[in-house]
Image 1 (cartoon, helix red, strand yellow):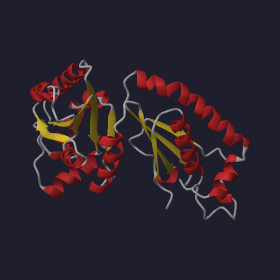
Image 2 (image 1 turned 90 degrees about the vertical axis):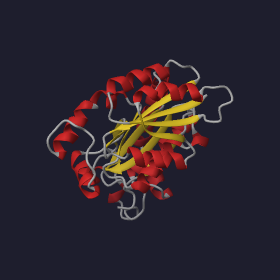
Image 3 (image 1 turned 180 degrees about the horizontal axis):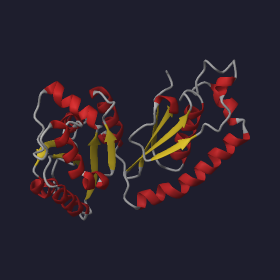
Length: 283
């Protein structure tokens, strides 16, 4: 089955950088493709014997309604697996990026740069809500963006099942922006108050055993497994291809790390490939 990825997003949020990253991953990428040509490219990809089966199309700031219509049309083709990626960033970051590069913003509505950006954000509201995957690039440099895209779109790991990314974090360092589900495990016993565990992390056996010997931790994981057994197949049946799950504790060093690692095992046992990262473990 051919893989088709539509990349949209705010001007300055990283669409062109995403295109370069996907090319490095082996995708056939067309940047700034006019919306009316999307179906034509799909027809070429579906020609029998075509060597191109992973195609990414970066759509510009044209009509979002037309883009959504084209994506719907592509989704009707049973030989295509169509996904949509939408790149965002906060207004302050978008302004800074344009000022640093001295590029002109392509959006016509609005007198100044900030007004043009706000107008574009409003214009793309429906397309953003339509996307399968949203990626906030506010705090990502080029290398971070490349790593995130590799997690999602490495060709060898492209699967027909729902892909899941788990990230542990600390609430005192801020909540991750681009997640679908967020769980708070600050109610669990805190290893920080155990002198022999304070300098360790959730990757250490002593911390893991400390938490998983507690009845409340066992109950929490049991209920989470039941929830995932319910929602993962339902998400997949609805056509969702990617799910991001964030687990938070106070500092992101102990409890959230242990729970995130345990959930990866749970998801793998359920047949849903999961990757895990620990955002704040070194802080």
